[in-house]
Amino acid sequence: MDTWNGAPGVVTEGASSSWLADTNDTPSEYPSTSDERPRCARCKRPLTDPRSIASGFGPVCWHRTELGALDRKRDEAGRRLAALARRVSRADLAELEHVGRALDLVGGEA
Image 1 (cartoon, helix red, strand yellow):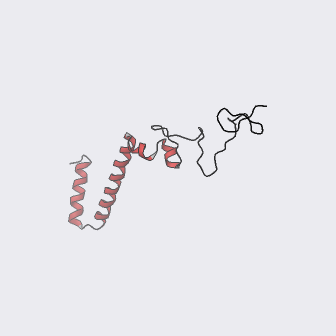
Image 2: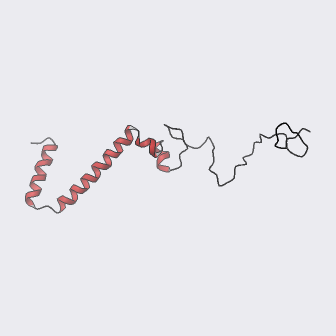
Image 3: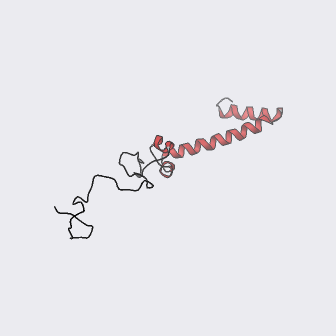
């Protein structure tokens, strides 16, 4: 029986000749490198975060896509609207009339 002891060209008895075993000898503290894990559609790196898996992109690649840019613009608009809502809640009657006129202009009603 031919066996391999780890040194190139040296064959000894007692070691398995199949050095390409089907078992995974990777220690458990290392992440799995299975091809079944979801991967980023842009860079093909493995995805681990549920939000990234749902979008199909890692966080860096997501920000580089058009959809990521749209998300950033929506987030910014949401922050600005929330700030406006806080300001309107403290406004007096004259300020509310100005806000109402501005909204009418933006909405297309003059």
